[in-house]
Length: 321
Image (cartoon, rainbow, N blue to C red; front, side, top):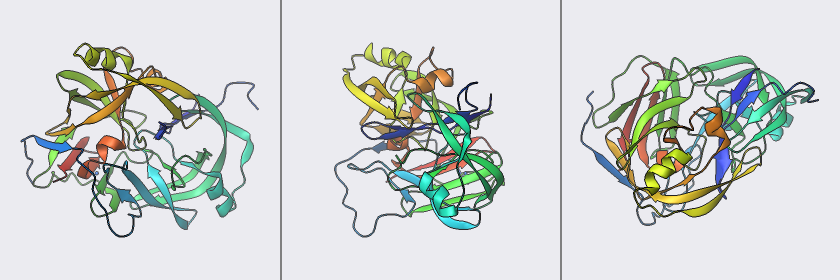
């Protein structure tokens, strides 16, 4: 069965994570500082001027985003959400229409999201290009418009030798071939494991609790599994109910609690709430038995700069000052 991951979900906000599979039979990016840097969600920040076109930070009243300017069949650029939790790219119906690409109604795939699955049509594109990434002959699923202005998803396929530079303060994203560059002065580093499906896995700490984590730039909201919730609740955390709507439009229910500082290498992110539950995606990733977390843009967007180096298997991060 062919699988594609494209994560996203809507948490009365939005969170995304997809995996694609053929439908069931019968269904028609110098020195490294070791000191801990604290990143805290602070009182409201006033931003003047035009909104960023592609890369925006997380602020008190807005979750950040990472969009990439992508050429499809030589046309565009189209704004696609960079989704490190997805192993395939995906498009909105309006993009296919703009490109004059017919939907293959007879050829469908099974989309696996945070909260459930759906059978969706596909389109075939001749080329998809951004920076040093070039893909041809791609089968892309058509997904619902839940991206707040973006026109689809840029998944992890083709990233295995790439370095992605993301500057939240200057609205910049660069996708280039990795040349093994060391982290710049003032950056903290963190080792990652890149799975066969191009997921970025790492070991993190939430307060005194150790957990496995997936870095998912396609998810707005950070979510945790039930095992992590139980570990945190034992330490006196109080939970409230929270509903989550995924890209497949299935609804899941979870518990939202304030969590201790989330440690990412030498950086700590404080004052966060995380929603926990038996989300479908944790079953797909086989992350149900031990504490695990999907780290979304509410946490990632608190950084000043993020570099994901797939070839070096390393995150290079600079905290916001």
